[in-house]
Image (cartoon, rainbow, N blue to C red; front, side, top):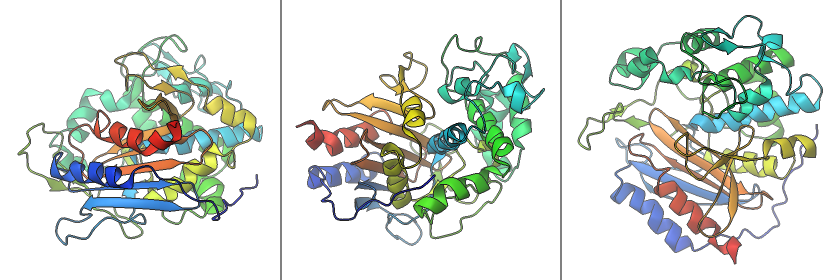
Amino acid sequence: MSVQNASASTSLKVADRAELQRLVRRAVTEDGYPGMILGVGDGAQLWSTDAGVADTATGRPRTPQDQFRVGSITKTFTATLILQLAAEHKLSLDDTVEQWLPGLVQGNGHDGRQITIRHLLSHTSGIFAYTLDASMLEEYWSPKLLEHRFDTPSPEELVKIAVSNPADFPPGEGWFYSNTNFVLAAMIVEKADGRSYAESLEHRIARPLKLTGTYAPGAETGFRGGHTRAYSRLMLPDADAPIHDLTEQSAAWAFGVGELISTVADLNVFLAALLKGWLLPAAQLEEMLTMTPVPDGKWLDGYSYGLGMSSVTLPCGVTVYGHGGMFIGSWSYLYGTRDGKLITVQSVNGDWGDPTSALFPGILDAAFRSDAR
């Protein structure tokens, strides 16, 4: 599949830059994050603004080329790989999990013979989220993380943790955001493509788009290039809880789900290319972007979800498409217009609070307000 290069001759339209700069500064001065960066682009050009620091020890500012862990934005990459394989007839979205991963999803109401790849990508499988398992919550979402930050569970182990809990609902009969879905999807990518997940991402997305800072690290604990440091309060709610530098850690527990490392510049190029139809044929892109409203209380209220992609209509009236992500030490948000002509990338290098409730949506609305006129 050929990938086109965006023309750099277009004139990038950015809404009130002073207002965007003010909102980004507020993330540091009011919300207390060490640093924030915002990038607005069209895949060819990028305007960015930042506040605070990438490294509290040196005071270095954040840049669009700094690598960071993007969290669940990884899901959009994983879904893109699956849909590319579907376009090549190497798999079908109606294939069952059992066809590709025999015997893996069984027990406690889970039945891989009834769960399709489409169910995985749309969060309608009913498979329990392994990240909500009691042992996972204790080891990764509490101060005990300091003892487990370099653990390297296998994808199979993550799925076994999930199916040791009761299924949430029969396949196709509900909606719940389950990270287990995308562990399984990434495992299927490996089976269908004959490569590791990291190799498929490099071969099919990063290399064609020249994403020099984007890769799946697996159990690697550091970064391959210049990066922003990641700061965590280890899920303690107190504003005066100690802050720990957790830049170095294994992402093996987030295989295909939230493990990717990328940059503001690369994410801008990726989402623009995806929405413009340069990574997927029209039929597969339409499948990805066919949205179903998320039930209230199940994820982000007011959002809709397709296949590894979400959408939301902003107060200004513009509907944007993309995904958010949280990884220990950072939050990020990647959204753009349906035509891919305006993309926003937001990232803070602290994992406390919930920037998806006000900070990120407020910046989205300000960034896309000019498109509503």
